[in-house]
Length: 263
Image 1 (cartoon, rainbow, N blue to C red):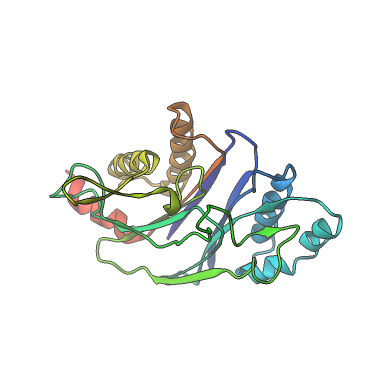
Image 2: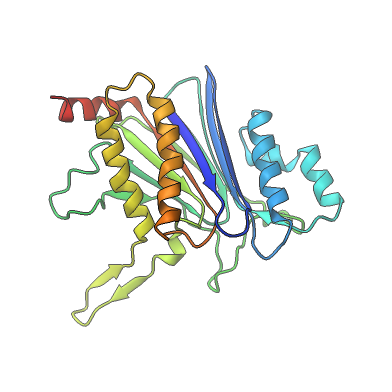
């Protein structure tokens, strides 16, 4: 699998994200500081730094981290959401864990081959945000989080589709399911309000894959794309808040693009 994650400052400088690629373990984590607290950036940065530097695999590892405990004991007021992805031993299993909001979407390598629409739509939301009906975060890592707020959601995916699998992970600066409201028109039809930033990422990602199917340094190019697409979203005013974006793809995605687009 190929891993990448990047973050970009837009408003409060409270998003942090990082990833690690090792022989037997790939991982990424992204955190979105809770904006109502001035020092939330300290929480999100610490969680990301410790998760990557100490090769943590689960949220419980972070909760027991001595540096995080010290931050809370020092009465620093702040908090963060949490999304992580870990793959071990180069197998097909991806472990996802999250607290709070943001998004994780899953789609296959043939996502751009649509017969019903010119817009990419064949993907699934696999993260149900921890948000109350009035829009408040119900789960988070913070100075006042207890057992209930630290109860994470976990997902285990077997990424073995014939055209490959792609996972996008992002903070709510890009999108979150609670913002994709359902609308009903006067003909009794139902429509979901799609976030345009996600569509921009999907379209640009398709073009990136087409132009990099034979690249010898694909992972480096993926990291550059990850950074460039965030810069594009910011420059074109798709982002109103700090944003993080993670990308995971399997080798079969590249194999599919080689078969379809190689001359």
